Image 1 (cartoon, helix red, strand yellow):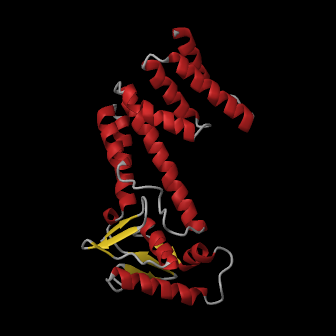
Image 2 (cartoon, rainbow, N blue to C red):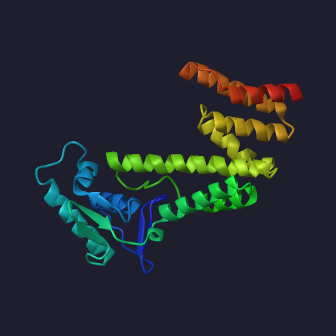
Image 3 (spheres, rainbow, N blue to C red):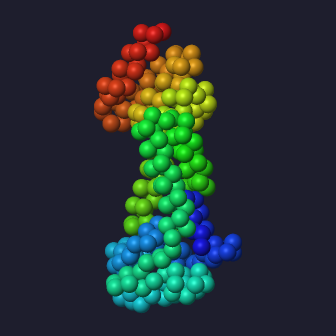
Length: 244
């Protein structure tokens, strides 16, 4: 069994697609997959499917959706097990891409902590290469999955920052300039991304563009949040000014 959530939902058994096509069963499978090996209470699944407006038949309807998921997975009750007040996707953790991704990210962080940026950069790249688009982009998302998707997407951005940091430590500032230009434009209030962009530009001999990046960040923070850049970013700004 292979279930992927880092992009469109994919479920395969022996290489054959088995994910349900109907919206509600896809939501059920997605939530069970993200929490594979954990019991997901029926009440949590009901909240996901209907938010705070469940129909009187919600529990019976949920059971129907679970049966549809089992039918598509073609494993009977083996994969989706019934537990007291809930359900559990009973597969090995490595069957779900999000678990493999998070294991690689943890390994990358450990390598960075051990002052091994080359290994850290490689592990972070391997992890980030697993993404095929926004998490669960083709699945209707209720309040519970929304939290899980946000967690995954924020973790993806953090891993990308960590990978860039490792690359900068290796002197690969030219290789990350394109990524940082796009990221700082997409996240105009994100101070660390702008600081990384400023650092890469400065190392590439482009201090004027680094100072421009700081001015854009400062203007955005003041206009949108009413705050100045952090002391760390202001210190970097002064260092670039003095070096120029």
